Length: 315
Ligand code: SF4
Ligand code: MG
Image (cartoon, rainbow, N blue to C red; front, side, top):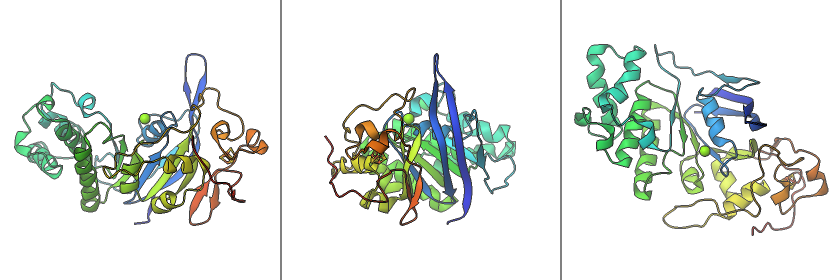
């Protein structure tokens, strides 16, 4: 715990027909071995882009991504991504043995004669009976398919799993099982996670630290417990205070007043100012930097050094 293993640093411009969208801008963060780093924010905040960049699926057009995974296992791929939809990420015409076994075979992670047993073991670890490895993906339920997707990711011996809405498409009871599987795998294999979700209840449950993103920037980061108990940034406060405390914990963001501005033409100054109940004249012109605040936390808000007395209410 606590070992620094990766640092993401990015400034990315994604070409749109007539504009450059800065989907993720000046985002810099540490990832510590064995932790779950939760990434939250409304849709369009850049959290998926961040995840794909970290996983190496997307190159930043400027800047750099530095990722030093320490494991030197031959052929191992240090980062793997788990997506929301197990239906679309698994080819229905392939047998599960191929789906899981292909990458380890191609990358020489397992000798050919050990591959079959390896695939069955990966499935068993992920809670799908390895004896069913000759079946096709469409013969499994949604929850089982997500387990197969996880087994496929684990088969290349990653150190880091980037989970992008990995449980969002599943029934609540299945979500809990998959979250528990992630936690068991962390304990068994020492995995590190970047866990991207719009579902604050799941993120609160699973994460050690949190990044809160708004329009492509980190607006707050810190230990999960502290962020949820005492959110500092007005955006984080609105997100968290809007969470209905349901026993089912199917907790999604309550809508925050105002629309999410277009990332093509983001508001000047603080990106959040048109929706912020505490906005000051300064906020419209001056962009707040992400600064260290108390408790090993960071926040980007002009008011945080002189905390407002006003209570935030969301509409
Ligand atoms: Fe609100 Fe200003 Fe802080 Fe932005 S900088 S979150 S507008 S108070
Ligand atoms: Mg997304």
